Image (cartoon, rainbow, N blue to C red):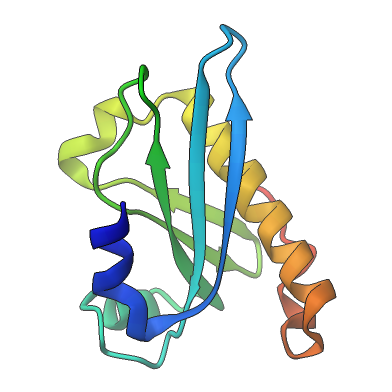
Length: 129
């Protein structure tokens, strides 16, 4: 996870870590980032701008005992809600439980970021699709 965060470090505006426990008791760690849409430090920025997203970032999952996506999962905020998209070759690992954890983490992250820094007030509250 540290290597992936290092690769996007130049574009990170905000970052937070979340801990979840699945219904079966397995712990899952999530790191949520808010990335600079105008930065071309990472290739995905242009694609996100083309989607007309208002904001975007990445989710990084980690668990010792649950198969999780190893690559970053992209989240995008639009007027009509949040969209979370895993890499095509890892979509099969992105279960409904991980998707719900990701949505919960991003929603909490956006609300907390908006409360912490007035320049991000427009991020919250996000609508869920």
